[in-house]
Image (cartoon, rainbow, N blue to C red; front, side, top):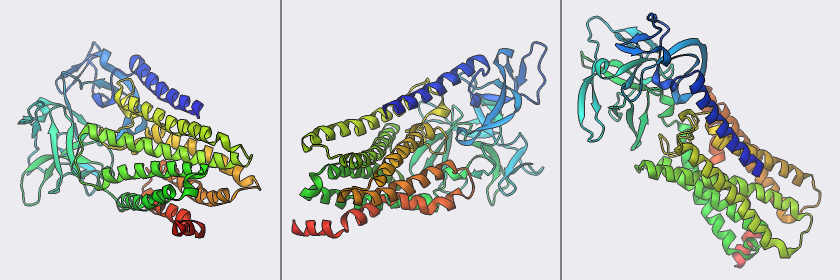
Length: 468
């Protein structure tokens, strides 16, 4: 596992260094700060004029990809792009060219009818004091054109609260939380409210990121239910002497406490209507990350210890062994948490490779493939390790009573549900994925219920509880 941590660190450094190198050799600036120059002709000196902004030849480069919603990279034909956005020039994103609007029924850009206006003015929130200023977007900003995804939804409902910032980002209030969207994740389009004859500019976003689906809501409540069942399981393991004093019992307590901590934090983040500051949001997110990674590691430790106990190690080394286990599980969890925090806070790692904790989310942004590096990558590696240890355990004929109990419990929890959770993440971009994996995601979140049923509702444990 130590080598695996070095591997994760190497991957992060590799991504960072390769991106920096790319900017120095080909790309002149971040993709979100560029505009497509395919339809423009260069001047004699190689520079371009884009909306009254001169783009020098040194700020023009060839790109063979585009970035869309969630910073997802899409392959594209090689085309020229120029750097226009930055400290001196702020950009704003339009869904369609000037004089067009985005039709939410056809999902295409169409011409604004002749009898309707083509809006250019919009209110923006000024930095510093929060004062509102009405500006002409074509004079105050440099307009970029493009849609973050094909199926957009306008923020025009009564409970849709948004505000265009002076730097060109959109602040959206979602479930009481402020989220800031840059020009890769929103666009503006003319919109006519019902009963009005005037078009106004409104933002459009990709709805799948903001609408809490039935599956998402059910999963969050399933986690909360799990916590309610994990609490008595932990209390029983702590109160029954024969459970808390053997090695497997101690490890199980650590696993359950870590899982309960992670699920509790995620439930608070996703279910409560509390508004968290960026610092509070990041603290909760990294705490949940530490707990869940720790739970994965402790489950692997439990497998390993059951398998190792078949060699009948002396009882006198049990305390030393538990200390080693604790250093391994909590230490690796702390190391991975530290690396994830570093990746989020450092300027070395490009934004598309950051975990996203504390920025737009209080948890890792699983809409980005970067989540593979920080969560699902370690998650998958630990799962493979647990599978291997479980296989060795199952192949052994001689097992203690505790081992015989642990195998079906952990095989169900890890062998089936963990695998499907990883698969559901890998297939998240497919339209049918949400419905396909909704049931398995809920079952995965109900680990506390399964643990209660299998660990507590057993004759031997019930008898021990009654005896106490």
